[in-house]
Amino acid sequence: MQLTARCPSCQQSIRTEVSQATVELNCPSCNWTRPVVRTDLGHPKATRCLACGCPDLWRQKDFPQRLGLLIVGLGALLSTIAWAYMLPVVAICILMAFALVDFLLYTLMKDVLVCYRCQACLGDSAVDEDHPRFTLEVAERYRQEEIRLKNSMNPQS
Ligand SMILES: [Zn+2]
Ligand SMILES: [Zn+2]
Image (tube, rainbow, N blue to C red; front, side, top):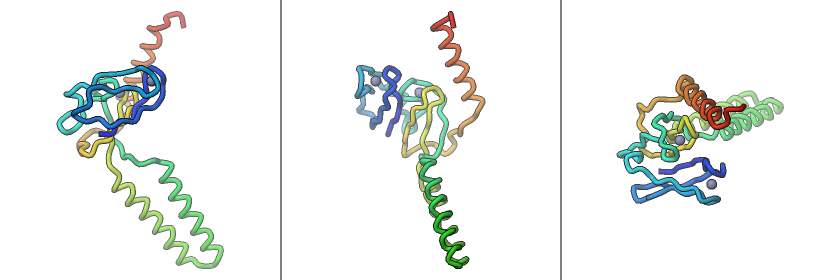
């Protein structure tokens, strides 16, 4: 499966392919490594974050929001041009065509799992359809945990 994570040591992004044969993750920019826990890889679905071992992951579409906005924006622009040329039917057809493309792209996109703690992204062809989506409650729990962790590291602040 495809893993996109941020190196906890140097903050560089790491993109790598993790398989049953992968022994450890390593950062291309520094010396950070982390052994891959066999059970974290799941069978065949990932249950834990491979980068930090966090058991809470949310499911989302692997759809870049910017691309979606670009498609909608382009559709709106073209249809405005058609309106300007007094072609209302063409304008409406353009809008509908672009909305359809947007919808199709979204439906065809695969799901990915995102880690609540480190935001690592696990692209998996076999993401469970029943896997829970993002909830603010869990995200808040991890945010609090991070604040506590920071405070305990420098108690003066
Ligand atoms: Zn690094
Ligand atoms: Zn993580």
